[in-house]
Image 1: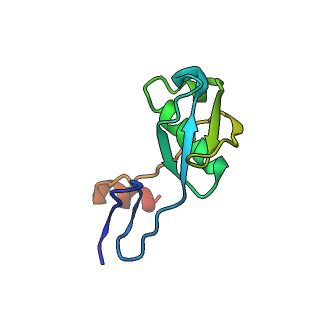
Image 2 (image 1 turned 45 degrees about the horizontal axis):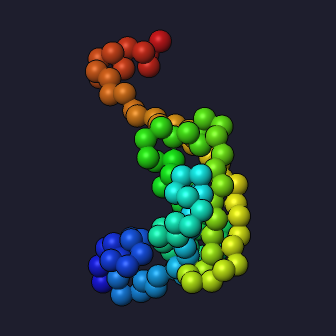
Image 3 (image 1 turned 180 degrees about the vertical axis):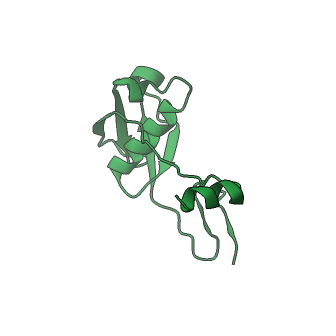
Length: 114
């Protein structure tokens, strides 16, 4: 059993148990034009597909969605005409770290004896 990237959907998973999520066509009309449906994502549903596309858009360099911008993302099943529209935005996620500072035993013992 190996953990690897799927050559179809690009997700990392255990290769013997992996099943690709459903395929969706997505479009950012302000960025790609009204008729550009060449962007494919694999997601559980339309909302996840829109978020995936927003993440791709946001990681193109300026992270505009984290500065309060919004984009419109259109999502449809491949080859179908019914389209769902999503307004996407983002916010940064703050992560805190703690690293133990190693101290000299003499200094540490002196502090503990006070």
